[in-house]
Image (cartoon, rainbow, N blue to C red; front, side):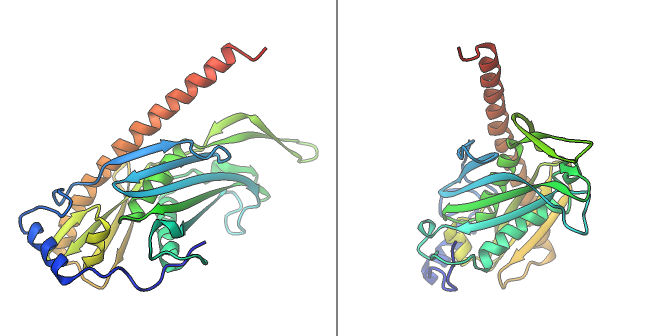
Length: 294
């Protein structure tokens, strides 16, 4: 659990002026150009007891996401759909501004942005997670842990969430037609029914300049941030604006361009790691079947 105090790190006006001076020359304090995103590294299957998991490094920001599937009951208003529940925790060791306690508004906001970007576009086919209509369904829990905060937690969490969902497996179940009993076969797994690959991309507005994938220093001096979620069929699945500053039409148009560019990079990297992991996992499974233990 975590609580983040209202106070944020103070960056001197001198630092903001330095950032603005660099941006006036299309440069950034860490050497990137305005549209560049930081390096991305993804480790998959990092939590053995989870149905799927991913450890993402976006620059120096680190996030872990885990997927857990449990059989439960459907919500009353969606009796023929499984449930998706997303939560986030800011681990105190991730930042001097994070403290132990219940999730504060920023952790709740992060979880909701990720949840809504997936839910409204039906990125997961929740109807395929029904075991007994109106009675039993799969609950899919996505738990996000921020373990190192250097800015842009939403995008790092989004990458970790998609990677963990795409590599998650759930046991096959059989339902007794006579008694309605459920038998869970944990030796027979199948992938989650993913319909669309959704990722968020965040753009910060600093003065009249826009930058993709803002670092913590850039977030701290930013007037506002906008997070746009895209699916792989080009649909915008969600938009979240934060900060007191405003975006003019020209800023929004440019932010959309930067966000689309960032989405393509995020998706390409995520698919690269996921496909490699799935290929390796399949090879291990086939080798195990070919050489069963004596």
